[in-house]
Length: 116
Image (cartoon, rainbow, N blue to C red; front, side, top):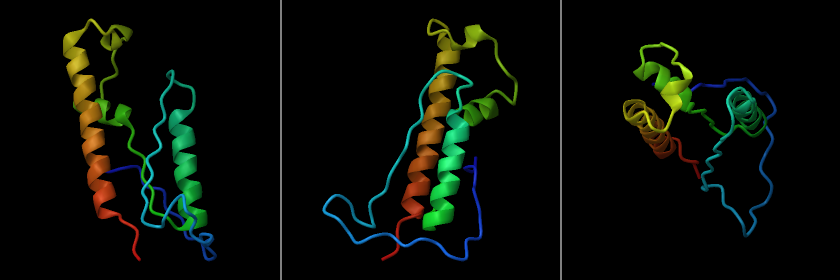
């Protein structure tokens, strides 16, 4: 599954400031959004990715575990009991979706390093 790509053509990308003792240009950052359903996590993640891509010219991607779960379920939405911790079959599917997202994120980060 491909990450949600945010593309923009910024003719005047911002440059990064001078290096500090806290970070280098080769550092990589992962931002994880966790919370209740329908509270704007995906929206904020996409907007943040768009902002960073556009203003700083930094490659960004959003890996939504919910999208991976829908792919495993062939696009079928599930009832609330699917998310019950006692439902072992559903728990295995949820874990598989999160592992797939994590694997794709690790692969993406390995191929999108900062050029020096």
